[in-house]
Length: 148
Image (cartoon, rainbow, N blue to C red; front, side):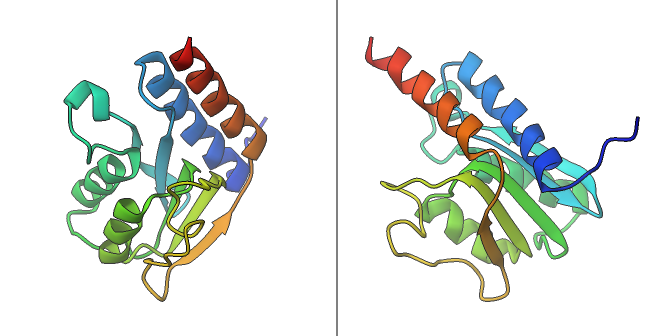
């Protein structure tokens, strides 16, 4: 059986990364970056492990994808992320000139678009994509566990 590589497929791969973050007691956010239907970067939050507030999944993935490409611009790439990027990450995505950002779950408190800050490059398409419920459930489980 051939697996269709579409937005849902790639968001599921990002959700695998989010689960890895969850298992490390990190806020469960996962990312994959895709170029020509191939995953070129995978990442998840590492802020606790690295003791670094900038170690968001998106930042890790941007660095990894740029290394893979051999350049700083991610033109022709799509980022799939389980939670809407924050202002910091949206700014980094601006500078990367990525073509498209697809997020599963809006972040009403800290998401760049949700708080009214469109910091993305004018040519970057940003859209809410699939797996909202799955991404939200993992985040809810994490914060429920954290509050106990």
